[in-house]
Picture 1: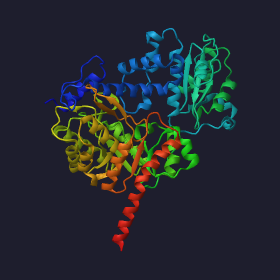
Picture 2: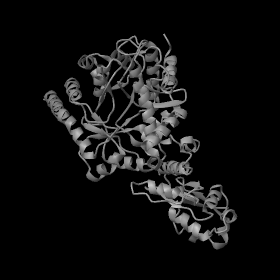
Picture 3: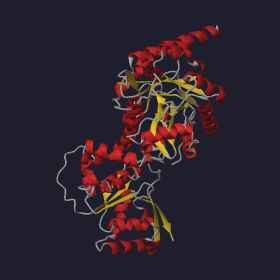
Length: 255
Length: 296
């Protein structure tokens, strides 16, 4: 008799290979091979994992339509099944998979929309933390301001795109009718959940470089210089006010 | 945010339902008179966010049962220690009245398949499952309930019946059982044995909870009936009749309505729980009368 480990190795290999015959020793009540019965498990696995992906990427699903999405999700499930039983984390690599999925090549912004949805989900499930009060900087002496740094809110995520991925995502995140979009305008999205609701905002010029520098621990002055270098239109006061209003900052750290 | 510790709240012998995000608001807004809720543990394994906020508010008002769907107790490979730790953390945080998992496997190597896959019933599997149940009970610091599965295939490697197997696990580990009556009907139909015989032979004295759900009818390789444990529709009348027989044997036992796919609106799900209460209410009355008689 095969060992339990051998039975399960054969069973799981046949689950992920649609062309494979059911493993030996798996039978119906008449003790005869039962491919259709085994197919129930194959179908359950692929559809359960596909449903997990479908639930996490509703805008991508709306953009490409149900049939295309199901085929793409199925290809992903077979290529990259989850390693953890916590399916909240499944789909982290789906945006990259879409970027390399040839049938979706005509929608070059699609993987960026997927990235917004993935990061939205991470933000939704992120650790809880109070956000810095909007007037918190008032208590910092002016001469110290350039040297302070920030820890960012644990739910903060940044999704950068060469396309108008944020506009496309927003339009497809609800059932509202869609209108034509100029996708050539690059957009960066700030995603944060300081309270119960995930909020997604468009990042002003230079803002993404600024947030990235702050996340790396740079001081306010250094991060402002980094952002200025990235985009000459960078506006420090406007960006700081925007981050505070969004609840994107957690604490002030003094050097 | 540190969660306040909840006082333990035992699961009453009433009808409960599986908690779905679609119903969070309706439950908190209308405070329905329902016995308890059950969660799939894996849906609450994020660090924070709305699921925990809602669950905390609901646990404040109702008893809660914790039901794992991803531990893979029937796997040949060792249990996932990280996953066990996550289960223990949920158990400590929410103080559920019951904790249960499945006689099934869902992980092999590094792959999680998100389905409750069947095991051959023999001595090797029994030893492996018993070791895993021991490890779960030690790690969680509590007794668990093990659920009888729905199955679509059999194994040539099986040498004992499902009931002999379940009795063996109970004898070796001291765990309790979760009796899924829909699974009895589904498996009995699929494996061509008699559901009533199975139920009558079930070690009912170890049952701490019952599950009910709807199934989808399909056909097998010979064109004969094959039932799928779909959890996507009302409880079948045949299953409800089998449930009445289970309650006649067991007395009033906490009973859950599972409806996980094509989730209906809250009034529809609540009405389904009422069908179950219809069976449980007289059983509770009978056991109250019995205990009164003993007291006199």
